[in-house]
Image (cartoon, rainbow, N blue to C red; front, side):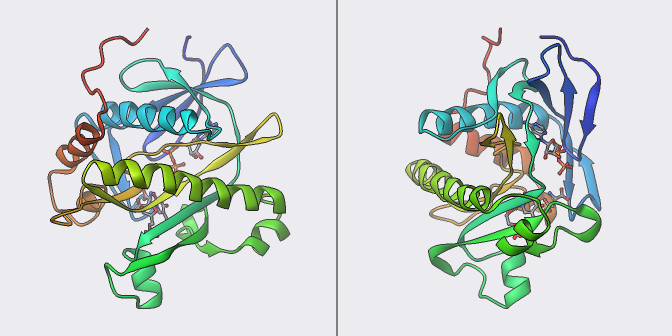
Length: 242
Ligand code: ADP
Ligand code: TMP
Ligand code: ASP
């Protein structure tokens, strides 16, 4: 499959048209951003690690019955995905309180959340991704009531599947963000699942193994991503990309 015109270039990925209108090439770049694009750096190997990481996770989710946009790996930094009509909303599940939840509500950092909590954010960097609720999504026509219900159900399903996988590998899936879109009228998981969009801590030491290392200048960002990948069994040396 050949790369056509660049459809969109975001903070970390570029989406390219292909000869098939139903397929896009999703390219993971080395660009790393935080604080809604205020802090941007290039981190060597990040595009490759995140592309292979995402392919591994999306395949696991697909096998567990989640409808995802992932089709196949195209190269070490590119994947072929279905071309979705994206819903401009971010779905966040939290198993442990940290990050913006603690800032907003004064909740103690590290508190176990039982049951896990759920938040919607509007995908709008200029407005710093404000938190929104189900009614906003429906009233402003971002998604239907059925889609809202499905986004929640699927996000919790992903939490169940991946929470267990990370636990088996000695890690805690603290929180994560998902984005969904539509394909042929069906809700489909899009975008990515990588350490850029989730928080992962070592179970024993609670060492941060995700983008918080970049956000807070802790160093060893890609080394941490690679450690998570290796513990989960992602093949970072994959040679067989046809
Ligand atoms: P951002 O836009 O947040 O800076 P990225 O750099 O990750 O994000 O760019 C990827 C963009 O492509 C995002 O806007 C995302 O919503 C969109 N996207 C992800 N998956 C698909 C898909 N399957 N079809 C169409 N657009 C997608
Ligand atoms: P937060 O604590 O900053 O709200 O983030 C919660 C989780 O969602 C965390 O794993 C990071 C992820 N996230 C993104 O990847 N992009 C975003 O724009 C937001 C708001 C959160
Ligand atoms: N994803 C957002 C950004 O890249 C927010 C964050 O990760 O801190 O700026």
